Length: 108
Image (cartoon, rainbow, N blue to C red; front, side, top):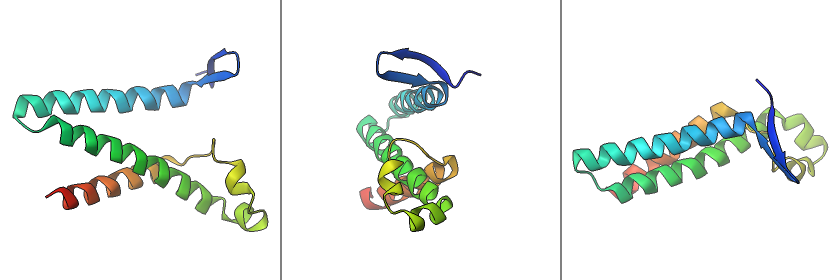
């Protein structure tokens, strides 16, 4: 697999990020379709998905900084230098699930 699929001037499309975006969009579409079919409120499902995505990004970035703790301690500017890259998938899963759990507890 090629890490970089294509470039549009300064914009670079990475294959890994594109696959994650396709997975997120597919999951949201399937969830809203099934919610409609089962009689659930679609807006709640969309909100849950959006909060899960945000929690996933935050969790993946936090776990990245935990893994790179020595670099963060050595140079605190490292946090700001790695804002656009460096995500850990397991942190994203944990952050998304935790955010979804909290959202479900708060909305009931």
